[in-house]
Length: 559
Figure 1 (cartoon, rainbow, N blue to C red):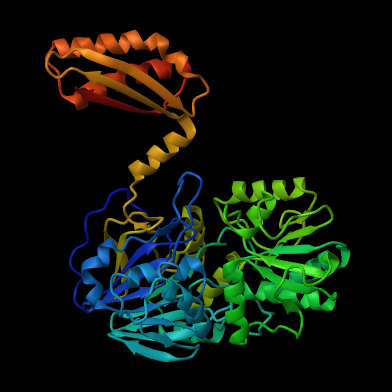
Figure 2: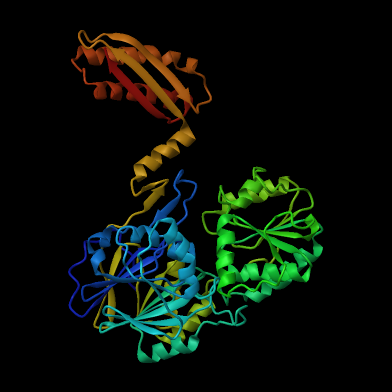
């Protein structure tokens, strides 16, 4: 087993006839999935998703994979293969196409349909798209791709076998082995077995649920819990789910139809995605069940299908919990059903929403108190099953946090896989003569989308934002006579976000003046150096007296 190294050199040139794999996102995190395959001077990209920010990343809208390692080679990219339509796999595509707009985008019909509005929003009209389906084999440059049906929490998901003279890499994408899926489309284990018999040299497997023993529960198993909620609710029902979880929304629509309720969608992405799914035949809606208005029927006959199951601040459910939604005001007797999992990192935000909804009198049903969600990812039993069927020579766990990757690696080793590689984003893995190994690393960091800015926000600036939010802000203004080096005015100190008023700084004023006068006597007239003197004296005082470390912005003006 090849373990992760703290420091790696840049990789050597790719040997002739070898296959190179560079994960640029999704290893060590849930999201931002992107993997680059290189053979004979050409690149194939599998997935290009986004990661949603956590609380320690204030103001950030999205986090992208780092395109830096391939930016000067975009002309060599023969295609972007998308395994399925979730944001963490397709959300970054528009940002990549903004750098080269004619890269072919490959995916299933639903996946590309969900991508289309994003491309339109970014005014990307020229990107060629190639709809593919399971069982199909297509060639893009030196890569022959075979597409395999897999079951996930969104229809039309695909695994992909990437065939080159260097060997075969099989990428599962996100998958599970639901034997009773709502749409009847199961993971094609026969194709996995056939590929295994032909020889899989590198198996890239979904690690999200590798720590979970057994098999993932079938989607159908939550139907009774949803039905119970509908049968026992006397008021309005609000269901929060991912806007792309077509199977889950199908179950809600079926329950609403059974209990004589109407369904209205709340949230732009929910409206858009469900219209796409309905138009393409992935969502079966009985006549008259879905309505346009949230008050189309009495409250006890209405179901609102909402976004915001992860506690996103601007999503519909969060605004309902804050009593700030323009259309929906919760009332005692309403039932809120969170039909989703807790993505790692979102727990606090979700529980705040649950508390807010409960405070308003709603009955909140969630994964913690009812079986209202099942995962879309294979558990340990399913992964073991796959390793025994495919019998790969090398395994690279993907899609998961560090502990998930390690758990997946242990499963692969337990089944006798000869070589298991643990890697992180930016690590470079070469498949040479059937053996895969880490040969180096490329610089690969987070790229922040902040409003209209992409990649301009740095970690240092994020730290400043956290300091401003947690410790407060102090400004100090001093005016210096540029001719004689005397203090003409100040220091004037103003604090924001600090409990004490400005009089708390009276004690430090003489110390700042004394330090400035001493520096001026020694011939220091550079305003930057004088600002550092102020920052040092004031910072020491605030840390010692107020037990805080605020951002200090000194300004020295010359008159």
